[in-house]
Structures are given as structure tokens and as C-alpha cells.
Image (spheres, helix red, strand yellow):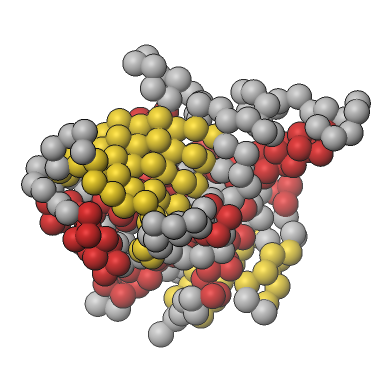
Length: 340
């Protein structure tokens, strides 16, 4: 049995990746439609060996469709997701709009699959922030063993997290550094991103945190455990694709680094590459196009009781966005629709 699937925002980076991953994973599709804004109407996108022409999101009738993967941003989602949900089409939304609504499940399938049953509250399921998604995949199996008290995370986030404009700005600024008179002033980012790092993602909040940092705190609590304390510093770096994170974890119980390494090796969605030698770790460029969240540099933190450090890398367009959305769709199909 296959499903009738909608991909909204099919011409964007994440939407295209959703289509790629649906095809790669041989998601059971009887019928699929690619939607975009009117300005992109008729644009061709790939779905496996097929070519789809985008249809108009504004006029599309969601009646009779099983699920819709949304990658259109919060503003458009606010308009169209309720229409789809009301028509009986379950929305899997990649924007931040619904993540913090208490009656809408926020799901990373490796962490909290049982929360899928709460889709029925509003026919909407939220996809987490890219930086949160990869971190909680690593935290959950360790939390199950030794209970996490506190997490301190510093992120190194690629420009693709800011969309096509972010990718273009890094590319144009990099070229401009070598061509006199071709310098490109910051537009998408607050400061020059080429050959630089920017400790600022999203807007500033009253306590001095950025919204990106707040998202990691709130989403980790909702997905894993509200008692976990999280503090984050989120930094944009001149990398095209692939988010990296340095994660410090304090546990209630002692967890030996060797046991932690074994736990993570057996955990779903994780690949451990952790050799204490030159190159014995994963960098973001090696994660591009991969499904796994990679863990390296696992080691005891002797400055606190029951502490560990680790390095976490993932393709942010995949596990951080499109892959997680498709995994939610798979979970929904297997646990809910098949039961129906």
C-alpha cells in the first residue's frame, strides 16, 4: 500500500532534499505532488527518475491526500498548514511555527517515537530545529543509561542553515576576496561570513541569548526530558553544508567513556568514528549526503563529576531537516495509517 504525499516548498533546498530522500528510501508513494509559491509555478524538480512540475500551493486542495511535508517557512505554514490539516491531510512541518505548542508533537524518531499518537490533536507534527535534531539523537541513549543533568553545547553551523541566500553569500564573498573591486558586503548575515565566524543566529532575546540558542534549550526539554538543563552558544561558520557541535554533558550517574562509546555505537541513527589519531574523527564535509549523525572525540571531563565531552556532526539539510521529516512520515505510516 502506498500513500498520497505532498511536498510543499519543493523548489527550496530542504524541499528538494525531501524529494531526494523519499526516493532514496523508497518511501511507499502511490501519488506525489510538488507545491511551490506562484512565482515558482511550473518549476521542474526531481523525484527519483521522475520529473515533477510544481503546482500552486495557494490553490491546492489537500482533500484526499495522506500527508504533507512542509518546507515553506513559518509565515506560509501559518496560512496553509491549518488548511491541509482541516482537509484531513497530516502536516509534517519543518518550520519553527508549531514546535513549542504543547498539543503538537515535536518528534525525532530515534528519541520519542511514541509521541506520534498526539498528531490527532491538530493533524500537525513538528520537525525540530536542525541543531537540536542531531544533538538529541546523541543525548537520548546516554540519558536512558545515566540521566543527564546539564548540557553545554557550542555549535558550528553551516550557511545552508540560512537557505540559498546563505550559500550564495558565502560563495560570492569568497570569490570577492580574490578579485579586486568584487567584494560583497554582508546581506544575509550580520557580518562577513567568508573566512570568519559569527556568534549570532536568529534574533537576540532579552536575556542575551539568540532565538537559535533558545530553540535548542526548549526543544531538547520537549523531546527528551524537561528536567535537563541546557545552555547553548550558536555560531555560524564558513561551511556550506554540515553542522558541528561540541557537547559537554553532566550526568546524575557516572558513565565511563568506553561504555558511552559502546552505547552510541548501538544507538539508532548514529555512527561512531572515534580514533585517537590524526584524522580519526569526522568533519562536516564528510557528513554531506549521509543519513547518520556522527560522533567523535568521546572523552571523560575531569573538571566536573560525571562529565563527558563529545563532538557531533551531521548533514543539516538531511538529519537536521529533510531526513527527519521523512523519518516522521515513515513512522506515521507504519504506526498510524497501517493500523487504520
